[in-house]
Image 1: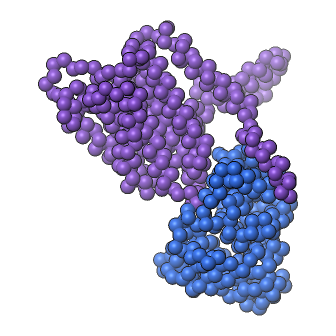
Image 2 (image 1 turned 180 degrees about the horizontal axis):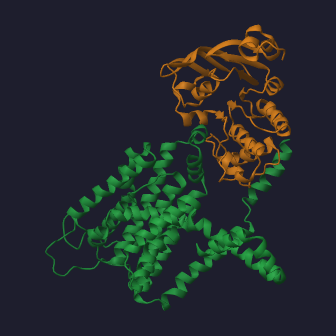
Image 3 (image 1 turned 60 degrees about the horizontal axis):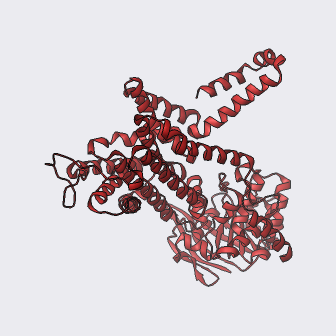
Length: 235
Length: 373
């Protein structure tokens, strides 16, 4: 469970998040909104890259904002980025092993292999990431996010630029993250078919403010949401 | 599901990364070259080249440290020669002042250099690129000023161990088992091997992963929970340690040290040879050491002025930046492979030679150009 209260982020004179309030309970939750709505800024706050002007973030009873960024990873925050960030010079195993987790020794190694197996897609531990396809490299990032007992997984447009077949596989993997790891997963994506296929609940951001949240089907029918984000046409 | 994971995971876990044919070939070549360097070279080398090759072995440790900083972490340090000077000074002071075994002195000099090197660079860790280079160059300048005032120990007393009025300067001692020049050469090669293994072990484990992440994508490293400042400091500490060991080794090799032997501009030259040799591979450090120490000796032996080297290095760095970012260590095997392919094509189809050279002039010229690099 993650609870966000009055979160405000300013970049100079620009207010990127404006008193945002949010509550996600469990499973895969979607966060959508037009470009510049503050979705990535919100992720940056959670992963410790951006210090908010005010507000609190409580995740599973802990105050996230008080932790240094590397402590958040140990605590269980995982993150993927809009642009691909798997390290091409390293093997898949080393990419996943990079995670700073509480696991040690044999348990840690077993967890890494399990995580690579979980994402599937023909990704094997000892190949260099540089030799994989774009979709497989995305899966490596998801494997990294699923390793080391995560509690909060943040996926920032994981399917951007992928061909349909690979998006389909990725959709299944993302859907299974909460069951596999027990982590609350937050998905940011512009691909509505992915979001509605994967998320049970979604929240909509516009100009740094939450304008709607609730069960996916209900929110997508919401009049404000359609106007702000989807236009007036039918979904 | 648990069963599947249990069956599959340990199988791949125990096998570990598979040693493919390419790495096996590389390993064999390295071992053979090292055996040649240790056993075949010393009996046939003249005193001049024994001395030169000792310098190559020692400077390969220095370029190893700098290559680690440049290639693995992206820290372009211009202060490595100053760090080497610190190691040489501490090594010489301990060798004169105490009767400790030489190997112990090497480790101590490495540790002292590590502490000083890390402390000085601590404030510079938040900087990158040009600013870090500037700070480290200033550090090199500062150290050389201190060095010129303090002088290298020459058997005198006090903290500095320097006595300006000595008529007969005692030589810095060597280990009892490596008193002669060829023996000290072997000793230097072995110390270099140990230092390379130390760095290799780092690259293959957690710090190596952290450095790779830092180099390619700092956000990704941060998100993975890598304490970036800590691992940058670690790289700096490791580079300082090996450079300090190299310094103490240099004290025994030269037997007399003078501050004029360590001019600041050599720091810049050091970065140039590291870039040319290849900062991303460990073999690049050895190539860089040959460029730094062997090439000048060779030119001197042939009676060619050393100043030509500066021009050569300038062209070399330009070539690296423009066409071969991996340096010679990366480019040379590729060129050889291309050359081999060309030759084997000629071998297999003697009749088609004319057709090949007429049909693919571009490819042929690439092969020739590669051979020249």
